[in-house]
Image 1 (tube, protein in one colour):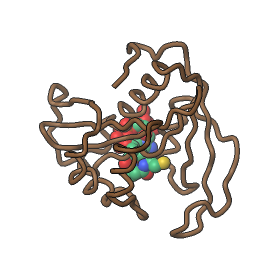
Image 2: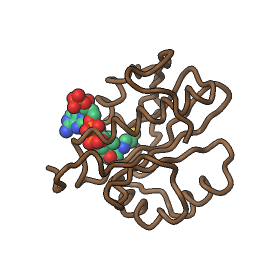
Image 3: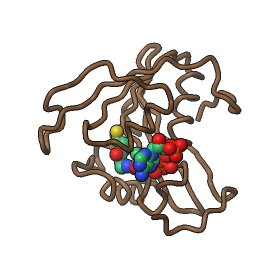
Image 4: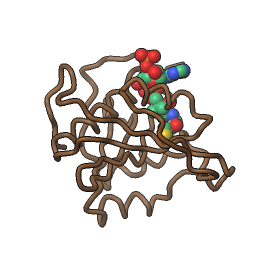
Length: 167
Ligand SMILES: CC(C)(COP(=O)(O)OP(=O)(O)OC[C@H]1O[C@@H](n2cnc3c(N)ncnc32)[C@H](O)[C@@H]1OP(=O)(O)O)[C@@H](O)C(=O)NCCC(=O)NCCS
């Protein structure tokens, strides 16, 4: 159930900055049972040359974020989260589409990710965008030994109604 009166013109998807991390951590803790540490995000933003992170900023507030590692022609999705107050508003979809566009803009032709077996909502999102299950990592999640489903998608030449972006 969203608590936001949605006005699309107030949404801005842009690169994540260190100054976003207070709010990113708030969303991270509201979204995951085993949240990343702040230091992990700092490392991604400052040291990891393969990493690209974006935020969905709504009216000055961080409503969601997502990350990608570009490894050769493969985009590896590291995380995607939407603040519970903003769920069901297609923000997860917009973030994923933006990652796909960024991957294509960097010469990527396929993308991969891991998702908890129990995370039906995220699996639905990924399947909607052509991700297919190719395998399982047994006990991948250390907090509850849950299995991860490994998914891959071949990227289309262009996403419908969107150009390629490099944020
Ligand atoms: C997964 C997540 C990012 C989806 O974000 P969202 O903005 O609420 O999702 P969207 O509104 O963009 O919905 C896109 C698609 O996701 C799926 N989906 C979203 N909410 C759903 C729900 N309540 N039940 C089933 N499927 C759902 C649907 O396929 C939907 O497309 P549709 O509306 O055409 O059916 C969000 O639920 C979240 O942050 N979850 C916690 C963190 C997490 O699990 N991240 C993924 C880690 S792998």
